[in-house]
Length: 215
Image (cartoon, rainbow, N blue to C red; front, side, top):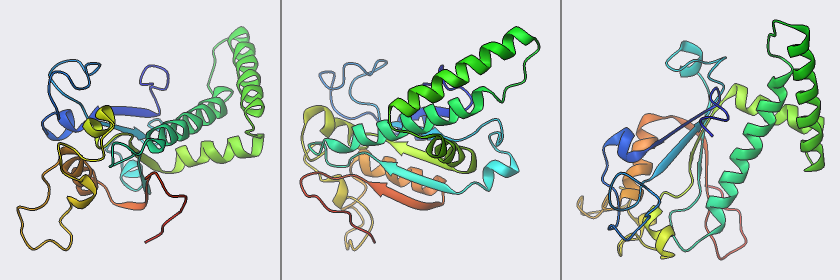
């Protein structure tokens, strides 16, 4: 995605961004190269052309947080947030296609053809012109931070906990013993992201019950 949408997405890990250790052993997450265990990926979607990093407009963007899962055996969330990210990026990229400045008539004609093509593909997916424009506006007017698998180790092992600890009970809320929280890298990853941002809206996925909870 960094190559496909270079002006709209940044991808890092909590290991790279915050210096947190990886989770698990050499047998876990073998697809994550560069060391033993699982990495914890963080994706940020925003319009980096209109709002360059560290610019005044970037600093003023409303922020949204999407968490795919904190319980590794609850599988629907990571797919859901990745599909949502795909839809946002496809719509924003398509909306911007015919707005690029071109030097030649041939290049302009090619862009118009590409714009019509991507719009038609979105329509075939059920995304109307009106909805495409709305999705593109979401990308251009806010920052969306996504952690697809906060409990990366649990997700890989298909286990609820991270090494026997429930990340959803690992936050400094209603805890008498200060050592009884922030024991998981999942919890610490989410905590660091919250310390860095001021989210107006956040959503996390669970599995097993059909309910939308608001608090």
